[in-house]
Image (cartoon, rainbow, N blue to C red; front, side, top):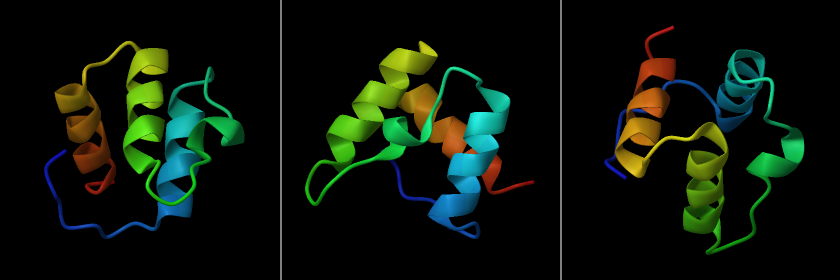
Length: 64
């Protein structure tokens, strides 16, 4: 996933995604050290997006 300039906290991003996609829950964002990639893969599957589309979604969140 490409790095972007993060202006919103992870908490804000989770809230925004949960509002936008009602299928997501807090549990979907849980990850432990070194499991972030697995969490992102799971989010991509649940949202029916590939990793590039997911990266764009996170980038888009920074513009709101």
